[in-house]
Image (cartoon, rainbow over all chains, first blue to last red; front, side, top):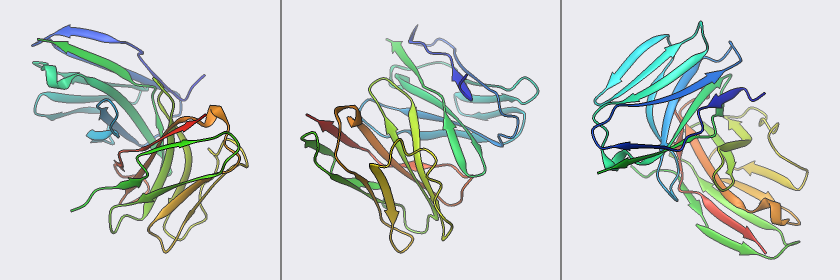
Length: 109
Length: 113
């Protein structure tokens, strides 16, 4: 079993939809929780970063962490075609990050 | 300021040849990471440098892979006697500290023929 499991997708939604992207993890020692966005043929770029349970909001994006369930989510409100990308969760312990395999999202105009 | 840069952007090599991939991290970042991403796959951790500490090499897939970081800045990933299964995008990232958000370079796309 992988340390970080991510819903595989792909996901296709109409413009304006609410998107939910999810990961589970097995190691309770994980301390930091990140979401990266990766456009085709580019390196990942950090979207959200949190270290505590609860919600963190940044514009149309909300990161949710539930440490008791070892479950993290990224919600995208009012999705736009420009949000079409692969989204990677990453969880860090002792300086080392473990990434999910990514969920590819397509937002159709 | 400048982000993480990697060179070359693309590399095609014949099976059995050695290759060197370069990473220039963001100035002042103490941590540097190498990952491998195969087509349609997530990021596979290879190696992690943090300051002057011994690197964490636990992700290197074989002894054909090695990396060094000179002067706490530029890093080179070397793959000896390349195999076709080494074909992938090799990504470098740097961060201010070991548990901070990572900033990625654009990657080097390696193709072994």
